[in-house]
Image (cartoon, rainbow, N blue to C red; front, side, top):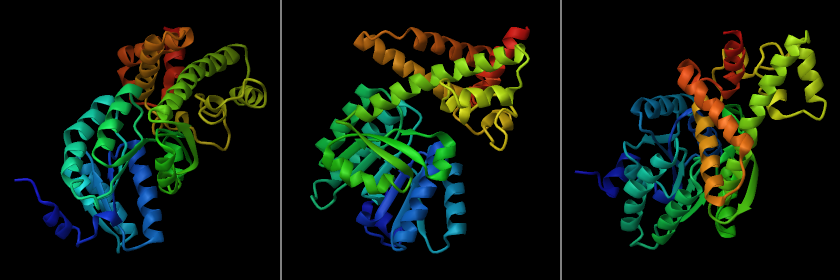
Amino acid sequence: MRPSFRNLQAATKAIPRAKSTSFIGLGRMGYQMAYNLFSKQYVQNNELGFVVCDAMPDSARTFSEEFSKHFPGARISIATTPEEATLFSSRIVTMLPSSPQVKSVYSGSIVPTLQKLHTDPSEDTFCIDSTTLDVDIAREVASSVIKTGAQMIDAPVSGGVTGAQAGSLSFLVGGTQESFKIAEPILALMGQRIIYCGPSGAGLGAKICNNLVLGVEQIVIAEAMLLGQSLGLDPAILASVINSSTGGCWSSSVNNPVPSALPGKSPPCERDYNGGFATTLMLKDMGLASDVAQHRRSPLPLGEAAKAIYTKIVQERPELANKDFSSVYRYLRDHNDS
């Protein structure tokens, strides 16, 4: 038998639902986002409650233990299902892998729970989804949530794991103006720039376009760095030239794929391409851009070429699939040497 709302409240020391926030999805990004959100909320008000939920129970357990260690007085609980997380809290943040997981979590758990809760008009709920997913699916999910009487925004992020750790993410928000105003102070605890992009789905549209640029950009930086070295240029000097010239971009100045090219900085290439934005996730985002472009009949020649390259990396070099996508440099270098 599933736990009742009353029993769940007892389990969380009777914290009112209106004073609790649930975070569902503790992957590389979600873990850091949740930590920033909860720690700053706790500093603001130590009577608040916090709930974590993840498909991997060990992730939620580790988070809870680490958070309690740094904030011994904090009241943090683990929800075993999204349904429980929804019962616990009136503020729900989700950071999930992609479209199928968002459909499953919302349609299968959150929406049915909200339909029961919102027979009581006092049970106001606000949902924030920071997953990068298909725009049409996001709009369908938001519509279902709103029909229960809750509010929802899409708020995908830009800034990567480093930005999530530093609390310096950019949030690209889609939803009503009213919902944006409610979300803004919450998002500000996890990021520095909160940009209102338009109605439901607009944040995702902006994110997909941004990552389309990023995916193409990282490949051409890898190409340029390989070409420059073949011409005898020192990687650090070439990177300095690019970063101070018209070719300057994040993929070179922050995420340069060549070790030692950014003295004093620590991009993923300095850690064997660990700890960044996984190649599989970039491939997912390129696929989203490709799908949207096909439906809208928008040309995407470079995007399709970049998608093909990331597909080859994942298929031919599976050990790079979960490495930072700047490992495209290693793929191109080794492919050329073979």
